[in-house]
Image 1 (cartoon, each protein chain N blue to C red):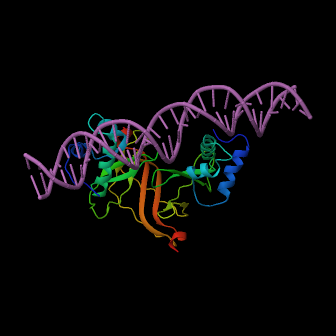
Image 2: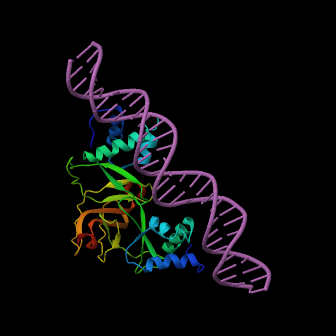
Image 3: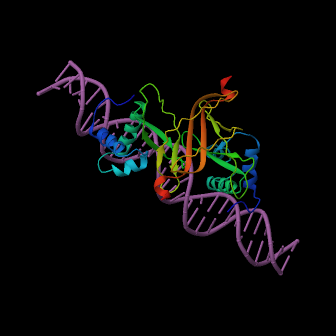
Length: 126
Length: 126
DNA sequence: TTATATTTGCAACTTAGTCGCATTAATTAT
DNA sequence: ATAATTAATGCGACTAAGTTGCAAATATAA
């Protein structure tokens, strides 16, 4: 079940995502907002926003979750299916505007494809 | 630094990987071998085998690490660059013998590409 | 067979994330 | 505008994955 009430905490979380196009790790969000929102609340809001198709989760190379804004997803399904880029220097994850071709594999039923590209981002290359 | 001494614990871990072609999660390995090997030891052995190019790590859809045998990697570098398939029913991860084309992205320096395909494996489809 | 250096076990710790429950605060009804 | 309803929050305690320091054990080299 997604968001029902427009609360202060929700606004604070949404503000954070409106400040950047990059993904934000749950850990950072918890750190940044710890004086205003409780950890559990942040986790719950992120879950709900994901249910609503507002955010999508990405698992980074170290297994830690990050969230980014969706561009064309709805409450019904996540249609966003793009690769993500994680920088080895700064750790930031960004969505890439490239479409991924979903391969067909004999004997397997393919559902979703997660592509995480590792390297150096434009910021860190300079 | 990789493996230096051939110990009993190492043999037990290697045996586990010789029993299957699927990836094994650290968690399962720790469970299966808990009467014989300490948790820390298992984590350390897996790290070393990865350094040596014997195993490679895959982060599953839930962020939990699994390890699988490498086919053509060396101590110097992991040349294995194939997609992995994780079944939504049984959770097992398998290496796919398909090569991944590494895309070039303007302003980014691409290093590695991780492809995790989600769906139903042949076992679970029956 | 002894010396030496790697490996191991243990226990304590860290970090990410979850859960139940009482309290607070949006929203709806009056 | 106020009271009633119910979602959302805070808190603390918990789980699960993974890490670390150090003393004891055990491979290997001498």
